[in-house]
Image (spheres, rainbow, N blue to C red):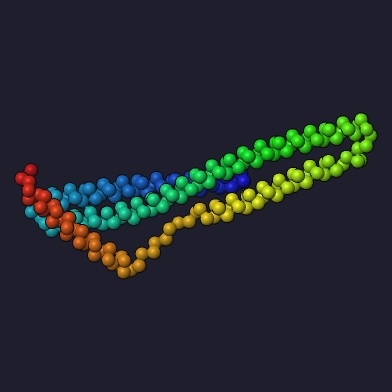
Length: 201
């Protein structure tokens, strides 16, 4: 389980690193979108509607990339949460196993000492060999159960780390392009209407 915990921590570090990288990209694309709209305003003030439309097209491209980045960030954040929960679960199990191991060790040592004392007092040590065998069987049972718990942890881990795949069809992509063009025209009309109501500054 310790090896599994180390591997989980390694995966978590990779996922968090990717999460932070996506957050930086999201901030960059948000800044690009805002700058594109500012450029569109400037172009309209200079009566350059062609430049304004081109700037708003850049803004829509940035918004499309932003949506993709945000979806990826949401997915990887979910993975990070699952890995953190799995890591905590593993840590608890390891601590429980260590405690159980110490209890078994203490119980075995106490029983072994009792056997030795009884052997010394009664001289019938051969008749008490079954005590040590019983303790060893108990330890084997604990080890077998722990191996099963490790196997279950491995199955859980393999199910947690699954990345979403892009299933967008060509038709959906083409429709998205049409929506982007429509959004550019609508954005242009909104800016023109907004600026028509204000004196040029």
